[in-house]
Image (cartoon, rainbow, N blue to C red):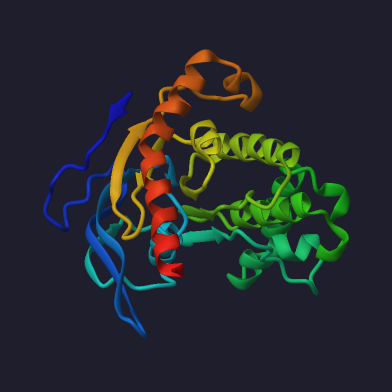
Length: 279
């Protein structure tokens, strides 16, 4: 098991093989009780094309970190460097934990939304959206509306929309957490197949160690509040991966146990914090 640590380089010297670099990133929220430190001195490098997983206990700042990278929040201090996307490509797309589809749009229009907002040619939209609806098994459902779809199908639309928009970076905030185990495995397999085609840089938040090991190239384990990097580990399994076949391997279970050994103490500490604040 390989522990990774970021190299110390001055800002402004982002290597070609590094997509995102954070150095000493803090986030403080103001509350009625005073300043609340959500993220504390986060420093990491995310390589170009890496499937980067973030695990940690509830309340550790995982989503806050993702929102900062998406431009939805601003960090309080530290430096963030992101290499610019190629011309004509958006910097990032985000897939949320909950349902983010527009209820008044059908499957096709939801999947095409990002491209339509960028005023792409209709022929290109049709080709690109058709490709990803086919890859996610939704080609027969283009005229249906979100209320007519299962939870798994709605998340497949979200995945198709994100990949069709062709972002440089894909940000995913527990996109499969509300699904049953069977649908979760199917969507993990679909996501892996699509990612193998594109090799986009992905940041994926999850509470599931199994999911982190199944999907990821690297896994960052975060501490309980305030969120810090406890460890970043390289996933040792080759690609392409088949979810169930991978999980049947003895070394898979050993690696999951090793990740959990880093995480267990933080989950217990987060629980103690919650019990203390409630008393």
